[in-house]
Figure 1 (cartoon, one colour):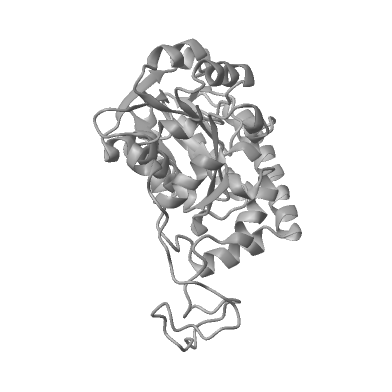
Figure 2: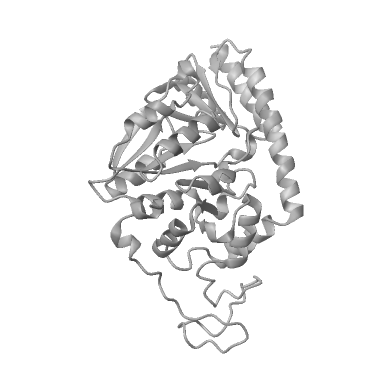
Length: 353
């Protein structure tokens, strides 16, 4: 049994949308497109024509970057669309469930609610650096569990998932659940991507994005990587022409060697600045604890989170406050050296209050 057999039966039977045939060097009178181009059209591919239903060149470039076959990858509008597609494909409303951790990326919960999927969240402890225990994940699963979402490095805690923990979950839930590892921040971690485990684990699915390390959040370009049968079903559900021509072309540019080299230097600087910030803030009397991070952000416990949020807003420095179980914490994204200095100045003033 392949993991694709866990998908909704109607999705397994779904056929992709059949768009008008696209052939170069032909007169295109088959797609109800405009025959002229706008004076504002400065792209390599004319905007009066629909983009490819699935951008083959971009798909191949992303597969090369992530170390997988193009047939095992679907390009999505950020990882958020990938999460939505996965839950819609695998979960029947009111019947099937997903399992994830808490705290973690809120979009798993959001799209579970949109689909009407049951949600089970396994709490992780700040006293244990928010470590994920395989046994607790497995105990939360039952016969209805179709998807397990694990974010590594995790948002908002910055913690990574040990390979041994992931492998235990994969093996115990083989043929029962798809295990989705969200690697939106993996470029900032010391550990390699788990994409290399795909060949040995047919229930593993990996999410990647260009938003963070490549500084392309505005392009909304992500990838879902997994078994070909699963990718084909996601392809059938995804809207046709999902990636606009300007997005495809700018991302193709970002994946050129020179741009990737530039991005690598940014990642190195962010990691250096992350450690500088953590070291400086650890000396502040206002800061109670900072958790180790493998991302481009870190989670910090402070004496008065609401006061810090008010003061930082006044200083035009935006931080992220979550409330709830993290009511005394803020998440800080690493900025430029000058921006980080501004943050340190703000916290120094708050500490004097």
